[in-house]
Image (cartoon, rainbow, N blue to C red; front, side, top):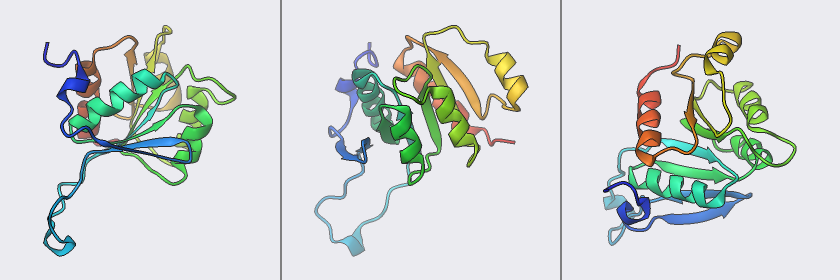
Length: 168
């Protein structure tokens, strides 16, 4: 039952701030040493979580921050697209069912205009990933799907797999 409650596994509680509607979660804090003596930790992978369910987004962000990822949360398609103008993540966890004028598919199209960043799609709707991969020139290293509801360990496993495969 170790990973069923990600809040109990999060070291240090993390640091949260909001910029332009996107929430940044970062657990890397230097304490009690002058800047010249500080040794920078290995740069963590940066993940953008695009999720309109605030409690799920926060759970995902804290869980991933506890596993040494820097996480930014966007709770709508509009905020996600705006965030991508100033923050290029190493991976995007993207809910397809977003409120507002921009759906998850719209966010994916906007992202693909600028980058081949790996994207992990999350949705509770049935999805024919094989058909989409074939018709849009994607591979499982650049685009994958995780059906909701999912375990946090399944999310972590997908993210680690996608980050270790170099896109073609």
